[in-house]
Length: 119
Image (cartoon, rainbow, N blue to C red; front, top):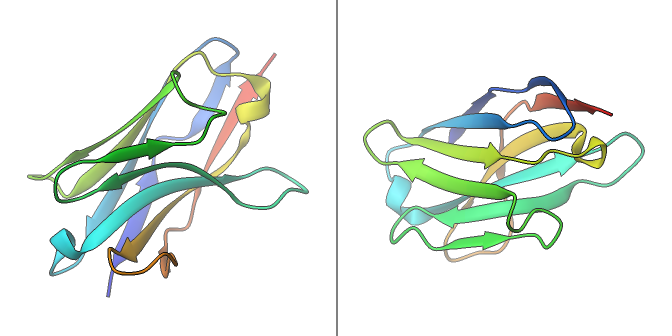
């Protein structure tokens, strides 16, 4: 089982920055990939970025590439999403998800954190 708790959302002006945190609780974190997704009102949940816990390999959606950085802190069992140059279209609920590295389906989710970017 994996428990995920997001924090760090808020209201920010366009061009600003936010850092989201995802605290991960599980016995064998090395077996998982952790990702950030987001869901805007009236839209489907979309992938933002992913990090493999072992090795730290990262992947980004084209919409955030160059503006966002996903990272992990092994000592704190925490994954971060640093978001810079935020745009109004980045407004969404951001979710942290986890999947076993042998699958492609994310089975575990946090409760989400709201990010609102004003123009």
